[in-house]
Amino acid sequence: MITFPPHLEIHDDRFAEMVHPMSTLDMIADGFTWTEGPVWFGDHNCLLFSDIPSQRIMRWSESDGVSVFRAASGFNNGNTRDRQGRLVGCRHGKRDVVRTEHDGSLTVLADGYEGKPLNSPNDVVVSSDGAVWFTDPTYGRISNFEGYRKAPEQPCRNVFRLSPEGDLRVVVSDFSQPNGLCFSPDEKTLYIAESGSSHDDAVPSVIRRFAVEDGTLHEQEPLAEIDNGLPDGMRCDVLGNLWSSAADGVHCFDRNGTMLGKILVPQVVSNLCFGGSDGQRMYITATRAVYRVFVDVQGAEPWSRPRA
Image (cartoon, rainbow, N blue to C red; front, top):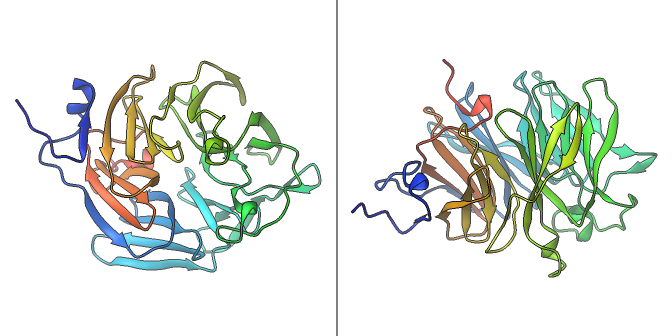
């Protein structure tokens, strides 16, 4: 019988095939206030992530360790990259979604809807057609810790789609607090975290799933409910499994919502991504630190895998 280390909780034999009994959970960086938004840049062999209250985007690499990628980040939260290799991030302070061009300049992609400022864009993904999808809860307006305290001006906490032509529209409007989101490998399903239980115990901590068709969403049954804490950031692997943040670590579900297993982390997890030189390292942002663990599967996002 194979014995797995205590940070791996096996619920299904399929999970045992995606982890390794000799893998370790390594803290690669610490000393932060609240880490979020990890994204791997394989072409630069580095990880970028946010330290939201400190208003910094940090950079980590195996060779150089930790450095500041951008100071005065405007309470930048979630990050992704587009197919052109540009960083796309959500800023609580500016209430916008912003893209970093290759020359380092910033382009604001969205900062308002129907003449009113956005709430506080939280997490973002870019589909293969160039559309930008992002969540807009009110976390950045609740206090000055992760943004600026101010009453929201949007009537709902929406999920938005910004078309490649620049048309911004609401695709979902009935969330209590929409949070992390990610596409299935074929982009036919969009998963969105409901984290409203952070302020209302009556709201279930579920991951909702939507069928994607011509830029619109059609809701299906929820994928799964988080049994410890709430869902925040998440990613899919190439097999279609969903890996979600939770209070006790990272929870892995198959495409039908069956719990496969957990990676237990000693701090509350906010987000995760795949990457590393082999594409089989999971980077986990967790409260004050960033962790890394080997997983025997690669991420669905093309930039999380080594170039052929």
